[in-house]
Length: 269
Image (tube, rainbow, N blue to C red; front, side, top):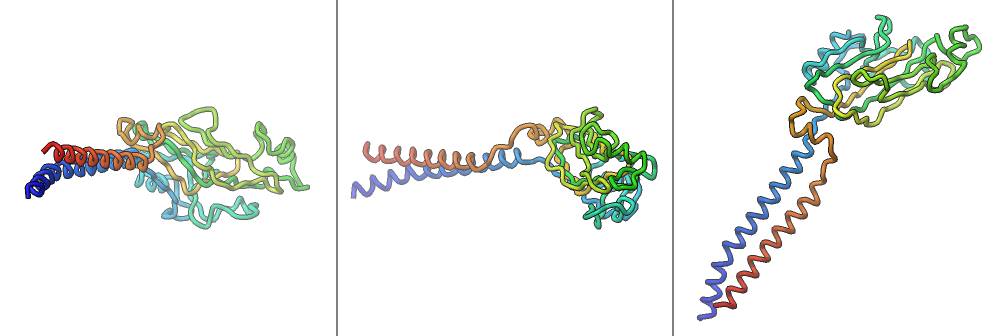
């Protein structure tokens, strides 16, 4: 009877400790989960342009983008679903859904998106296309101008060869550059992959004199450099699984310490 009473007394003493250990472990896990969530709070903005009509103006494109990232200004752009390089495209294009391109007919060889000084872009990705036209081709009927174009071929430094360049924040060095492939009418289509931009504000997509276009633009960024999520764009985000595992281990250790203390109390009685 005495031993039973001692056991009951010991259990009564140990139970609050175990409950405290479990509560501490749960709180720790919740804290770790919250920290992991904060570290992964980067904002992704996606522009597929599909709500824009074929031939939508630069003003319409700007309104569309402002609906996703307020304060953005756009210049030199036009929307299209049907443009095919004046009939010279061979193979797929960015259509039939809407894409945006420089408004060559309006005299622009580039289009610009300026997201403002208080919006910071950490990375982007997009689909791109270099459209061909009759001013540069490898056919036997080449004019003098087109022969000048094809003399050097698709190499960097040949300013007459169709290409696509992305310049960031007014830099003279392209952050992304593609040359058209050699064909009867030089052209190219592809995806950029993810491009790290180190908190950029302005994107300028520049064309060789014909036409270039983009679609499915994805921007990772934030509105204020002082925000926690924006600061975390600059460092790799830690995986939450090792942190949760550590929390569980610490909770288990706390429980073991409590049980060990309870056994010590039993022996001391």
